[in-house]
Picture: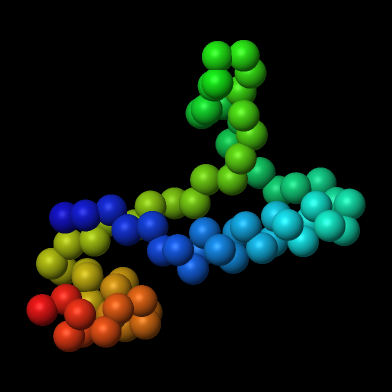
Length: 73
């Protein structure tokens, strides 16, 4: 088993946040309590990790287009 964080999801979220900033809108966040830097809690948007194992790796990694099958052999 492994944890997979699709960089395409991270990029899409980052682009959406930059767009919100550039349009003067409030940035969408979903976490205000997880990260403390010793002075204050930092707000952010946390993307959900996906758990990948032998039963689902083809759907998540190959069928999604993230990897080609020969890259995992």
